[in-house]
Image (tube, rainbow, N blue to C red):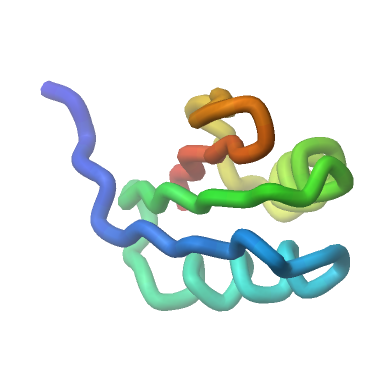
Length: 77
């Protein structure tokens, strides 16, 4: 059974390091094993956020483009 995304946050317009800080705060609000979807438009976030989250033992489920400028990351706590 697929795990559902329990929260989606839009961080378009945010830049590093706030992209990571706000993603981490959103993860603090969910239980272990739950997933969140975070939408970004910062190219830096595409590299830095997954790297930082993996260092904290969060699992990156998917990174994908929404369109030419925006992308999302699905993270499991």
